[in-house]
Structure formats: C-alpha cells, structure tokens
Amino acid sequence: MREFCRLSLIAWTVVGVLSIHCGPARAQAPAPEPDRWAVVRCGTLLAVPGKPAIEGATVYIKNGKVEAVAPRGEAGPTIAAGAEVTQVDLSRMFVLPGLIDCHVHMTSQTARDQRLMSLVKSDADNALDGVVYARRTIDAGFTTVRDVGSLGDACLALRDAINDGKIVGPRILASAKSIAATGGHADPTNGWRDDLFDVPGVEQGIADGPEAARQAVRLQVKRGADLIKITAT
Image 1 (spheres, rainbow, N blue to C red):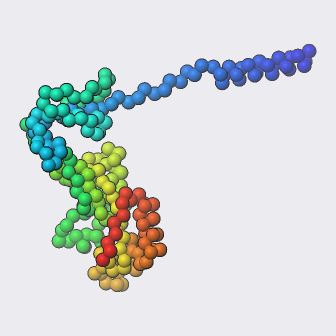
Image 2: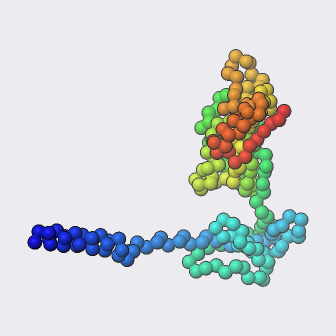
Image 3: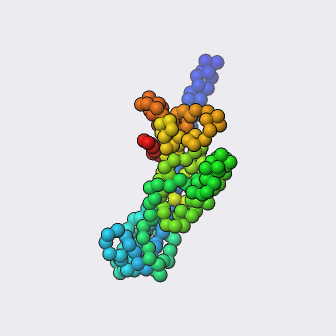
C-alpha cells in the first residue's frame, strides 16, 4: 500500500511538472513600436547637389531617415495606420540636406587664451562647452561632423549624449586623442618648459615607431574612437 501511494505521488508530481512546462504560453510578445514619420513640405528643395532645385516638393522621413522625395502633385509613400506623423511646414523656406564638416574640435574653439585654457579648464568644463558648441553647429545646418582630435573624454561623452537624445547636436564621428611622434603636431607638451610636464607616452597619443603606434591606436579604439587621427609631422 505504501509503495502504491509513493508511486501515485510520483505520477501526480510528473503530471504537474509536465502541465507547467507544456501548457499554452500566456506571455504576449510586446507590440512593436509605431513608425515615426516626419512630412516636410518645402518651398524650394535642393535634393541633389548639382541638379536644379525642386519647387513645392515634400520630403518623407521615416524613423530618422529620408524615405522619399515627392515633387509637387505626386503622391508620397504609404504611411501605415497607427504611425506617429509630424507635419513640418517649410513651404516658405529653401531646404537642403544637412551639411557635413570633416574637420572640427567640438569641445574647444580658437581664442587668444586657448593655449592657457588647456591648462585651466577641466574635462568637465570642456564637456559643458561642447554642449554649447554642438547646438551652434546644428543650428548652422551641420548635421554630421568629424572631430579630429580632443583631450580627455569630453568629446566622446558629448557624442554619446547626442546619440542618446539627451542633448541637441550633430552626429559626431570622434577620433579622441590625435596620434603623433614626439615633438609632432599633436604632442601636448610642445612649447612648454621641459620641467612642467612628464615626457608623454602612448597614453597621450605619442608614438615613436611601429610598435608604439599600434599600441596608441589600440588605446584610442578601446576608449571608443570612431576613427584615428594621425599627425605625421
């Protein structure tokens, strides 16, 4: 009798486990996020450099990328029901694609005391300056920039904050610290007294010879650089 009870208990336990694992799935997959559209109605549109501008065209932007350009009187792409649509009226404006600047330094600007400020300002100061310069850059029509040399982590943090939508600015491709030979253009100790700073090494982007150059590049890649800036002279 005890053996029968023990076997019955085991059988019901197995049935219960199978019921849990083999029962119909109740969890529902999350609903996909709706597409986000911007419909930009232009007065005059320069869509392709070198070709005539188009009067009265409409630009359709889907999830941040241009989906289509419809000349006046032509239908645009089909927008699915449930999509988020933003209407932008630029019918009195001349519209052109965002500009690209291939040589910027987003966390600094040329000034009489720029050299001194490199010693006075902290990485945090440079990051906050970068927020201001990023807004000026996007307001000037530049939607992508290539930052070719910066100190510290300010520019990399600025790039990431823009990508995350925390602040307004252009898309940044950052090189982080430029790489140079000792005494080269990107040697941060150039022009200062020898007793003010230690001799810079690969951590500061200084590379003398192929092995040091490889290490310097790998360090910038590790920090998150999108590209490498080398000053050969």
